[in-house]
Image (tube, one colour):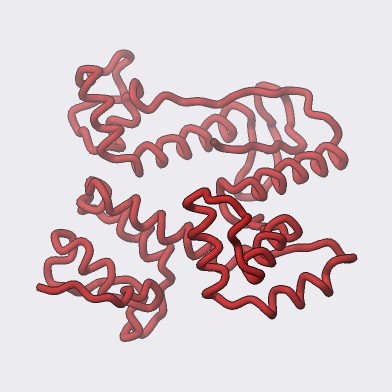
Length: 260
């Protein structure tokens, strides 16, 4: 077998994931973004479907979840990243961009990667280097990006301005490793949640299960969060406001939460 010098297309390629994971797709069918489907299914929705199947081989695979997440992050970067510049320099920046080619930017990126000095740069490369200082990259819709953090911070400020400062701050950190509920969500049918102190597997086995099935860990966190706010604090998620009875702190007007 000889490798090709051409990149494999990432978009609209139903054979990409099937080829990467033949053990998950032994028949070579069921890939993402297959145009033969009568009802189009997005990449993200299709991935969620695989993680919700009764057959948990997609959850237990060591690399599948990381590859899928990486592709989703790359796509969000492709679709949501844009460039900004000051209004005073916008015209000159636009002209500079139009005069540069992909080869010029590629050459500059290689020099910067090798950490060479800027003195041997040619005129085009110097122009590209100057643009790096005058142009900002904005990626407000990409989870985990610095721009997303700034957006969330501004959202919190607006939240405080409308509702006022919160009366209570707390950190919610349920431990999936030591929870019998997570063990049941993992698939352990031997645990009886009606017992006051249900018997669970040893600690090293608990940690192993969480590492093996991170999707169940995420589901446990969401389940714990929903239960705490619904039954302890009296929040109605369906209607988006506090219940008539309220919770242990009375009726909640609003709340703002972030996950790390």
